[in-house]
Image 1 (tube, rainbow, N blue to C red):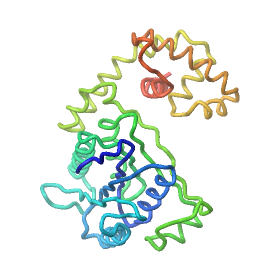
Image 2: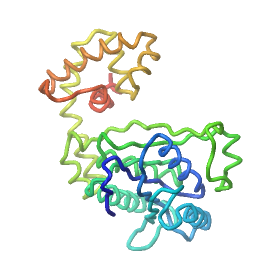
Image 3: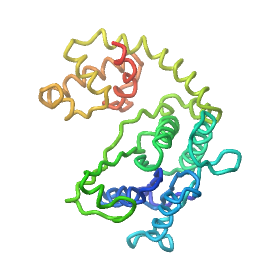
Image 4: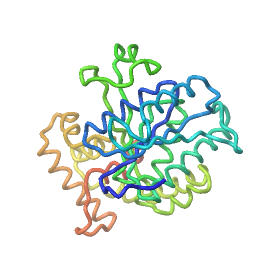
Length: 293
């Protein structure tokens, strides 16, 4: 794995099952957004499954000689293994731990080499998506993106099983960004714990969120009810324009409340004015807190 010299380049990591078109749909959408994708990594279960094996074969045809749609782009695949043997499925807690470790190792290696990541978690077993989200929360940072794909039912039937590997805008396929809290950006020790096990991470995360509880409470109690509504909306993963629509208020009013909330956060966490702070901080620090108030 070697990061490109292009500072704007990124890597796509996707979970793969029997629907190979999910990978090309995601890649096409990212390229249309102006992204430069130089590497694609496919995470999948055993190729003994004929549908997964066929999906990979179809995708290899799309990436001939490490080119995709006339652009240099390498395709690599990462099978989930336990004790050196590819997993046919995730049936037990031990299988889940092995899957998590495999995905964790991939993301950790890519991040250590400086890759900026896009992750599409709509393909393959749902458990793979959950493992990828878990590992991403521990190892990714603010520049990385997690994507879910929505395909309208009519289009879904037409493209199913790789019958069509590319679509037009009129087909309605959409990449939807999934909010994620990059915990290790705030608690770097979690990256080290991530090398141990999911249980160690969960225990430490519970301790860290417990430490933040008094600060969250301090900020919450200094806000007006309307400012609390805005904080809750941000903590639930909404952007400023979505908060405005959700609360039926203007965007300027949302921004006014946001300024007050972030000022209180600076005081509670003792964050200097020189350090940038935006609404992502609210989501990342208050996501669990608002579930309990």
